[in-house]
Amino acid sequence: MTTENQKALHTSAEIFDAFIERSWRSNAERQKAKGAEFVIGKREGVYMWDIEGKRRLIDCGTGGGVHALGHRHPEILAVLRQALDDGRDTGLWSVPNAKYLELQDKLAALAPKAHLNRSVITLCSTLSVDLATMFAFRVTKRQKMLAYRHGYHGHTGFAAIVTGSPEEGIIDHYNLPSHSNFLERFGDLEELDRLLTSEIAAFIIEPMDYETFEAASNDFFTQASRLCKERGVLFIVDETRAGLGRSGTLWASEQYDIDLDMMITGKGLSGGLYPASAVLMRAEIYEHCMNQHRFAYISSLGGNEISCVVAAKVLDVASSPALLENVRKVGAYLHNAFQALCSKHSDVLKGVTSFGLAVSVQVANRDLGRELYRKILADGVLCHSVAEIDPPGLKFFPPLVLTEAEADQIVDTLDRAGSSLRKSVKSAA
Image 1 (cartoon, rainbow, N blue to C red):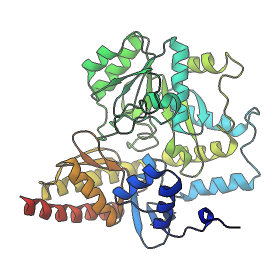
Image 2 (cartoon, rainbow, N blue to C red; image 1 turned 90 degrees about the vertical axis):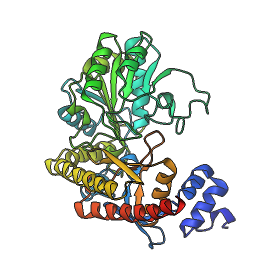
Image 3 (cartoon, rainbow, N blue to C red; image 1 turned 30 degrees about the vertical axis):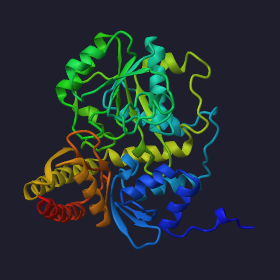
């Protein structure tokens, strides 16, 4: 017998209403408030269609990079299907498998620094951050982390304690233990020098400011690396968003002269098709943490054969010269086109910050940013978000396979929205 709750849901509105009634209400209401009452149906490349098949969006959010190679990338999809056809499944965690070794070796070969030659494969970046934090606690015998206040590293376990954003952080909500201090200003060396005390086990940071997409300066990262080494603090770079080609090189860390101890990758390592993440580290950290206890890290599904097959192909695609050249070319193209819009709509749009294909357009104020978000969404472009810190900005995080023609569609949409808002600003003046 079919109950009321089991009836088929056919439209975006019906699914949103059902979520509000009996599931994650706050999320559904938040999306509706942004004008994003959109449930994904067909998806391919840079595009998504709603479940009704009536609306098409260019995905410039990509789940923070989960779909960095676009939706249902044909090469990734092919290896996933082949893995299933070959008779593979998740296997047993206690039984070594060759695909795990192959992925470890590939990560070592492609690592931004040669000494990051060991890795642990997990299911998601949050678990990788959680594990890296535990490793840091063991290696240093300290139990305090340092992170950037407005970074993002995850929502469970130790990853949650290093996500201190007033908007997205959940430390107070869950009454989590205070095992972290926070750098308030991205790139502030004086503050970093003061906060890197003898109680800090590790400093974890992304290569770009998550809220503004400003890349870390060479001086900041170089000095951060030096200070960490001098004070016995592990330096952990979280490349969950900036890695896998987003910055124009496979790893953003390649662009800095740093001596990092661990690196996180994930989200896009899944190809958007099968969960995969990894922590890369020095051999001595791996040995100290993984091989000095019989059950140092157990995951029923982490590092399973299918994850490893998919992740290995993602690395092949993301490290290809053609893909990286496309990121650099289209990233510059989009930056320059947005900069031209800032000149045209100078009362609304104030400047552009970018790191490869992570592009933020600064706006006059946060309310205008939210209105722009809604307008371009209605016109066919889903943005990543509106920055929660100053300067406010509208954030674009498109698939790395984006073409210049598709970039033009994004620019035209923002142009129309800017024109509309300019009229509103003038009539209100």
